[in-house]
Image (cartoon, rainbow, N blue to C red):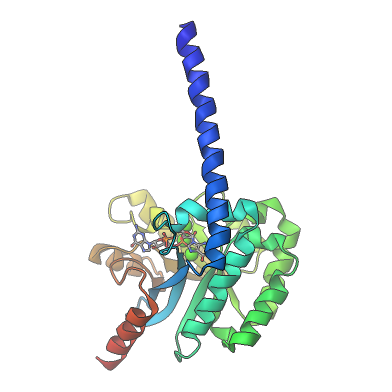
Length: 274
Ligand code: C2E
Ligand code: CA
Ligand code: CA
Ligand code: CA
């Protein structure tokens, strides 16, 4: 009816307003949060499948000291990306992680790089400066990037990835198997690693198609001399099937949730001593 249509339009507008308000609030919050030291970095172990030894950790941002209550990255990274605040936020995470992990010999470090950070022409220079200032060994650093901006500006993405690799670090294609990520990217961009998304890797026990896609991805990666990490490893079945499919690295709650630095260091100490 006519009145139902009218109501629907009103509701639609209200939702848009609320969404705009949410974004402005969060944007202000991130800006203040960066000034007031409200952000932290936690670390999730990534295990070498064959040996079970922890080979690296992924740095993940947290916002525990937000005055209105803690918020997870899925709720604010997109706002940071749209507002440009991803540049200082990303820089904060990289610096903190390099400082935290620099003194742990042998352990590699993965840091998420939002594709929106490629918009910053100074990105490569800033990464180089952070490595220099923190003394973190560049060959132990990996940056994980999702495919978004690879579509937005492929020429800049190709250049940025080449420049970053020239510094001596390695590059991973994150969230493979979702969105637009395609085999074409593996040819165009010089990635060293693929991270198979948990929506795919975490369903190999239930979905034969997912299992086939993981095995196919591993085969393609092997042909291109790219290594593969499976995300979302939650059960012993996942471990068994993903190892069988040929994934070299495994990451997920089965091994550990993301944890504060002190707990990860204790965990590393335990696994190397026993
Ligand atoms: P991501 O890069 O794919 O990170 C993996 C996410 O999966 C993390 O969520 C992690 O806690 C979660 N996870 C790990 N193992 C399992 C598992 O076994 N099962 C399930 N269900 N989940 C698992 P988190 O920390 O909430 O981060 C979500 C996303 O936010 C990240 O996805 C990444 O895209 C983004 N993000 C987090 N920290 C940063 C950052 O410092 N910079 C940027 N640019 N993005 C970040
Ligand atoms: Ca990641
Ligand atoms: Ca991922
Ligand atoms: Ca993700």
